[in-house]
Length: 158
Length: 418
Image 1 (cartoon, each protein chain N blue to C red):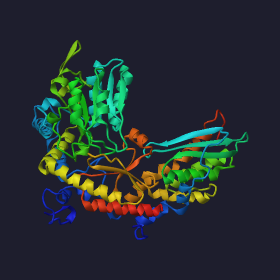
Image 2 (cartoon, rainbow over the protein chains, first blue to last red; image 1 turned 90 degrees about the horizontal axis):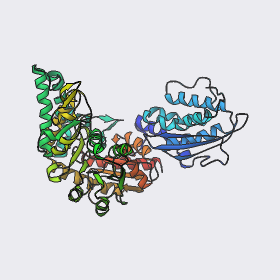
Image 3 (cartoon, each protein chain N blue to C red; image 1 turned 180 degrees about the vertical axis):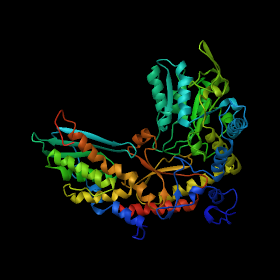
Image 4 (cartoon, helix red, strand yellow; image 1 turned 135 degrees about the horizontal axis):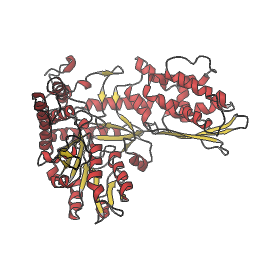
């Protein structure tokens, strides 16, 4: 039984926070976009997590629409769902900054220094105690960076 | 009997799981503040202290290169290495050393057969027959071979219980089929295939048969002469031995006609720039310095299994599998994947709509080690329309209390995702 008795079980509760479970059960922006300018696929062969990220990026480099579809564990689906909420309406440079900050957050060594406020994304921090699951949480973010960087010749902050 | 790490196992009857359990040091530890419950032996089994000690003793005292030194240590190493081969001969009832090739594992054994036995004989229009439930190691080597030769890979279907249809497989066999390559026991589903009947039928058409025995050898008596298979591949690390050592059994007359798989030292009798003479069997297939300590460990693992008795092991695991299946079936929302009539040692399942990796993490935090994912059998997952399964797999050292801990942990997982 899960009771808050041991550190291990606290970690488990920290991983499967209510916000994560909510996004895993009801992922936001799940599906395909009508008008896609950028896309990338993320595959985690270890887990079988597989997702496709769709973006519509304006001429002024604003992400005007985002959606994803695929299948995966609760962590990867929740992370992708939180991603869509986070980057909707952002410009690409700001979105890529989130990618860096998420990587830093989940690498577990330090809090992101001078990034945007991670807000809800901080609920992903519980993954730090589960090294085998970090890739699940970062999958969608890698796909985001790949999608944004996939266009021809446009310079990014990277 | 005194167990390891100070646990007294006075009540354990010799020749039973509780007694066997005391022989495996890795099982006696806590993981995430819970006693370890190891239900992942189909991925890799733990090693008894006799295997660990045999490898250490070899490394401490007897190590040198094999087959090429006149000094004492080289002689000892050669004796140990060839002694291990003799143990394999007797364990699977081969006719002699010439039929036992040491490889890196099941995967290399199958690749060896594909490249050395099949490739020289194949041409466009020939066929290789496998089944839908094979491990990737019994799929990809044949796909590569087909790309190289223009031969066709034919896949026999499975049913919703994870069973092959004997008549369908027989119907796929004809004069253009060069090899029937099938699992003895499915790693993802636990299905025991009707191999004897298939071998008899294939042989009536002069079709050779390779069995992937990785999931059979640790769990049941295997007699290659009784089976009459032409090739039999298995791995040390799934039968309580070390990783990086495996076996290819091949009938001597087939191995004799096959060209070497790799070239190098130890597989030759004479090397000149105008021609090289290959070594005799089985050394023709063992190029380079082999995994000597791995072979020593495998030999010790076979000694362990011989004392345990494979019939007794099989009976214990059959009882335990029945218990596990019954207990799992009682969990609300569980879907068992792989429900063949004739099964061994593993049970795959889905727990409601919880992704298998979430199940795996939650179980791990209660000390229960299972495998989650596609189990290197992606076509099986495609067939069932799922990304992967959670899989609990048994070995001789598991007991009913391991199953009880599994069930408790699964009920807890359901609560988290309720």
